[in-house]
Image (tube, rainbow, N blue to C red; front, side, top):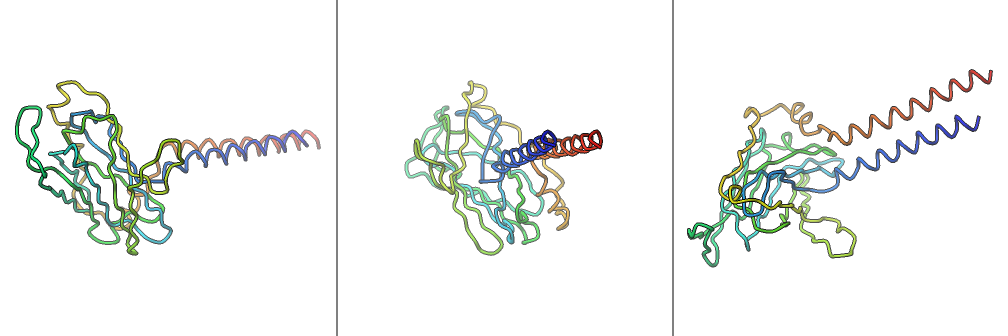
Length: 242
């Protein structure tokens, strides 16, 4: 009976490992931009998890850099949410690559749920998109965010990781920018096709917001298959022994 026991323990280990690998994807507010280039335009996607067992996320504010100002931002329509883009005057006017004077820039982008039912439910996540540029000519930029829950709790995602130190509890979202050519610096990226503008019902919003990431689904499938194989093997060995 040692062999089936060993097989079952192996299956259990695979299950634990799969869950452990899937969990980090839900940890923090993060940002990504597959077409975001240095000095160019791109679509930035903010992934926002509700790390609460009882409250929903109802507000998100993202702060854009002021040392290398971003002058153009378009928000993607999101049912059940309103988006507000705030401009701010530069202390010292700057020149763009074409020699035009820049006097203001986009300082923040805020998404607010129209009601608590439209928020991101507990232990679920959702995505927020903007098309922005020109982006700073840096390999990586910090985009601090403030997340507010329906119970009034506010979480500031603005901590910076120090070299050689563990990741802070509330790290600021970091955007990786790829090197871009002249064409990328002048042509804005197309905004993603918006979804239907009608506000969803509470159940529909919950279903949409709670769609799990594909890596998590894959890990879960692998874990289930491993456990089932272990059980089948145990049954076959017992039948042979009897």
